[in-house]
Image (tube, rainbow, N blue to C red; front, side):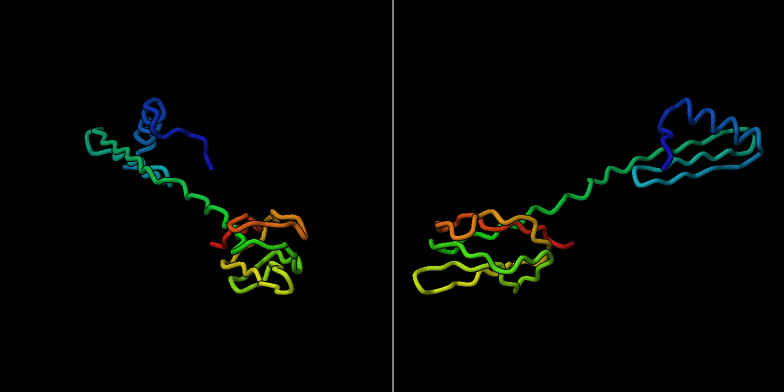
Length: 133
């Protein structure tokens, strides 16, 4: 978009003079960060309203970390990029038992944090998922 600062008094004065010279009765400029309204009334009286809206930038959703539910050996599953909450990302091997590790959240699998066949403990981070908006 434009890099013009509509809150600058010199810019407002320039626009006011240009509108008056052109015989235009007013101008309104709206952008996400604010609004400028210049109204040229009869008798060359000018009314200027400048309002700024402070809208916080949309916060990025934090990554979801899939953690080990218990101690065991980490076994990777098939590499998925886009995952649903029910997708199995890998397994935790405890003796002869394989415990599936579900994504728990839909999103994009961004990183595998544990190495294959590594011994992991309860709560150790295994995967990072970027949630879908």
